[in-house]
Image 1 (cartoon, rainbow, N blue to C red):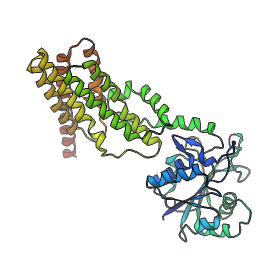
Image 2: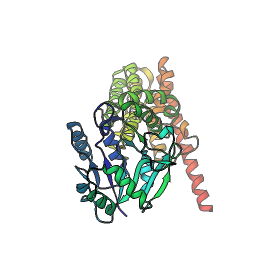
Image 3: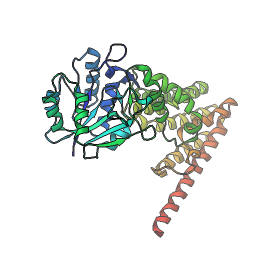
Image 4: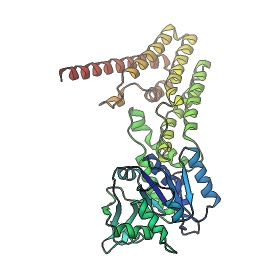
Length: 399
């Protein structure tokens, strides 16, 4: 059954503004809530708001630009008209910060439910249901109950009244806790700091080469934390990495290896940081994003430019051959690599690994030796991946 959503967004924070406009991960809370719901396939998304300040209207426009249709209503009766008869509605309380995984798990429930937390001092700001539990700020109600509640509402608060009625109707109660992903109730920006830090830590994800797994995380964490609140689009960082790689190729061709290395080193974490910021804003980068796919070819061009420069400055034709061999084997290894992670793959040839390994050679100007080492490294990675693929194919044949 399709699931819609009703977000309450009319209560003020401790400073007189709306809770819905509290900042979280470079966006407002209402944007985070809407993106969580949209990512789970929930539609329509209706926001109950008595007045729409300019900042909230701007947040709605940003959501619509990103393809998330969001509708604002002024009262419960108008909200009820936005949902089909018999539909289930996810009610999201005012100032509630839900973990995305929790929303996704609720989509296929198919029945009315109320998420609860323990009635203790830690949750004293949450609305009490009975002597043992409080409302976690998330519930599944049906459209008929919303309509009937709105019709008899009067001056009562829709969020609280609807909660009381769905509890009286016998909705199942689902206890949640810190371990299972507990929604956070906030009324001031400081309460979001720990949640945002946890989001940043969780956004790192798996890393498939030793450079990004062991060397770059401190840089990633710091820069991501600095940029998450900035009006910078993740795609700009990808294009920045691509531009730096092009500049590195030009610098190698011109005979400026120090400049080239600086550009390449600056480029190494940018695509990772971009992916993390996109994840934190609940707008993951497209899997087939052209600028990301061009990072390796342009890095290969920089390697070829290095071989050409070495050949033109006494390194001999072997430098060009080594560069060509490294690029060819690296591309072949990339084609052989399976989509799923492999044990030990962090030590295989990759763009970032090749850039990091250039550092010790650059200190001594041993560029010919570096090119030879990269050719051997890429070739070994290719043959190892080919061996693994043949072994896996043999195991499948025997099965």
